[in-house]
Image (cartoon, rainbow, N blue to C red):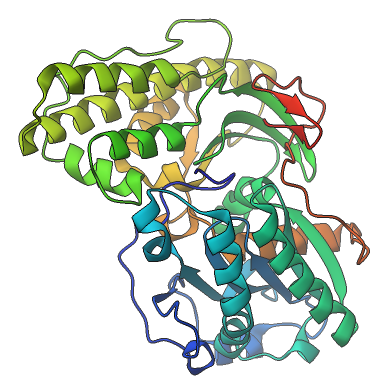
Length: 410
């Protein structure tokens, strides 16, 4: 099962000591994802007394994460801590995320992860102004764990609470990492979403294109499973692709040349299955060549869609001094895809902003930063704010892949 978030989780090769608060959990593969930052002591000295500090909690899929984000004296956002616990090993035997296992894992881990984030940041609950937690989209069980934890901490400490759309966390990450100004064009590519979105301002999102079937991260995962690769699928397909010939298998480039900006990856996935069947039994080189051919086709499809979107963006905003294409979501960690997008951006005279690989996958820092922007804009939530398994960024856009009682899928 793909989450509404990211399929590339686990692609980073980081390790860190397990915080003592987490040792009682059987989920002990704790990974600290912290960019190169000044020490907490330096940050405390530089931080103005009135600067808000935000604790962000993320539990929408198979990673339990918490982070503390604030602002420096000059207003620049800064990550004081960012702690992530991956459940990838717990779900590996099932070939995908099992919602019940994910929810139970979040329950076991959340207290220790939050405590570790506070300790790493050198702060206590009394130093915070806001608690932000992901309310959707995602797996309901996990969302409830994070939301209830965030609400309980906010209520107990007398802090404001902000509910965050997980997709908005990804969408605003370029502002956290690169101080990107509104408006900018966003490509959101993850296990559950593939969208081109115009980010006009906080909470102001206009969807220009979306997938009409599978998300790209889902296609990576299913290709990996078809070829017998372990989870997480995306990073393993990328690793095998590096050893393969991307020209060996002639795979389709879906939607290529169409004026509309939507995506389709179901046919590409089917073409991989047909090629694999024709070449079976597969050798290690066959698998590598299939991965390389699939990755090249996916990158070409994205590049075609983005090239057309950039032309529209430049026409809509001809006077922008620094036009930006931002890419976010777990699939944004794929280097071949980044390279293809960079070529399109350069051709259009646009700057490509791709967050550090460690901030592409699900993390608490992006939730904390989205909560920070919302808090500063006066957009706080009550403790009765509900979780939402489906929560499009552009709620006015017509859904293309289904609409049910829980709302639009994309």
